[in-house]
Structure formats: structure tokens, C-alpha cells
Length: 246
Image (cartoon, rainbow, N blue to C red; front, side, top):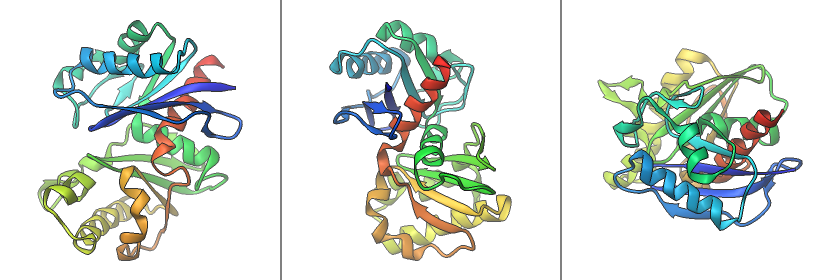
């Protein structure tokens, strides 16, 4: 069975059909820039373009960078403020002509890794952290998701954590991998004090370069890169949409 997964990020919107039996992309992913400003209508139009590129007419799962409750987006850290209170699920369904399921983007990535990847069959507390324009998190206890944790916005040293420790911060401040890794380690250390995870899975665009920074991360928890790297969000969004069919 295949379902189209779409991952909406601060800089790009990417999607691909996903083979749910294997948890892998069934076609090469298609990516378009996220509109700026990222208001609801322009973003929905880009999502529709991604769907059209695959000549897709079935269910669509969308990972979205916000708290998502019942298809409604409740926050907007790295997207336009007009998304707060918007019914993203209805908007995307209208734009694409397809049944749509919307889920927090980090939760989507976490579901993919817990089902097919680095967290498969892992019990205890597992924390997924996606690193990109912002910092996203997905928290699992004995395989069950605690949705919409959004722990990238905890304060560290009086500042929003993702302002200091995201990949966007690394690029903005032209930080070396060592300097950024130390900052990111402080962020993860704070999460470890709060949740005592047994396993931390790192995802997002920067994880493709995990060899550059993983050795700077010194925690008690096991830390591993996502098996699906930056494709976990697409795969998890499709997986979430499959539950809608069930």
C-alpha cells in the first residue's frame, strides 16, 4: 500500500509516495521552496503542486511545523502567524482534492523511526529531535506518542532553545561544528534532565552530516541518527494518514 507523504519545513516543502510495507519512498521525492511569507493560501498552493506532480488522487499525510489538534494548527513558530487557529486539514483537502491527515512534523518523523527505523521495538522513553530551521521533538513512552511536545521552545539561558541551537542558528552565526555541537549538547542535556530518555534519535536536514558533530554530544542516553535521515517526516506523515483509512 502506498500513501503520499508531505513534509512542510521552514525552507522547503517536500513529498513522495511511501510504501508502507517497507517504510521507504516509492518514488524520488519532489521539493519546492516554502513560500515567503508562509501564509496559509500560498503554502496550500505549493502542497497542491507537490500532489499534482505525482498525479496523486488518494490519501495524503502532511507533517506541519506547529501544534496540531484535530487538523487545526495552534502555533506558528517558523511559519506565518495566520496559521494559528487555521484548519490546515480542511485547507489542504480543498487545495488538493484529496483526503488529508495533518500531524505535527516532528511527531511524524518520530512515528516513522519508531515503526521502521532507529526506535523500532524500543521500549522505555525515546526522544526524537529534528534539527532544521527550528528544533522539533517527539516523545514516546513504551512506543506511545505524547503529541505536540514542541520542546524546541524551552528556554535555556533566557533564550528560546531553537534560536541558539537549531541548524539555522549554526548557519546564521557561522558556527563551527564544535561550537554548535557544544550548544546543541547543552540543549539535549536539559531535555535529559527533564525526561531521562533511554534513546535520543536525531533527524532533520543536518543529520546527513552527523559525523561532523555526534562526537561532541556527551549524555547518558544513547544518541543515534535517524535511519531515514531527512525523509522520516515524509514517511511518518504517510503513516499517520494510513491510520485515517483504518
